[in-house]
Image (cartoon, rainbow, N blue to C red; front, side, top):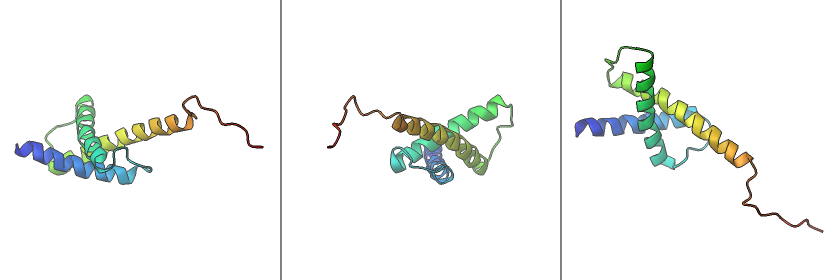
Length: 99
């Protein structure tokens, strides 16, 4: 149980820091930042495994890895949301020209 609480805290901090690094609005607000931080920790850990980097990290190393992973995820999420909002989807509605 203590590990889960520690990961939640690390995720919250990493998500908050990543939100400050990547410009724009974080989808989901504070809860979204926490979720992004937790997922970022998993992504960062996966990247370290793929690079065959030593996994014996302290909590500070885990926080740094989570921040890097959360930053990557936030960049992808914000690019996707920017693309979605710039596609001009108006739900098929058109407006009549003003006279």
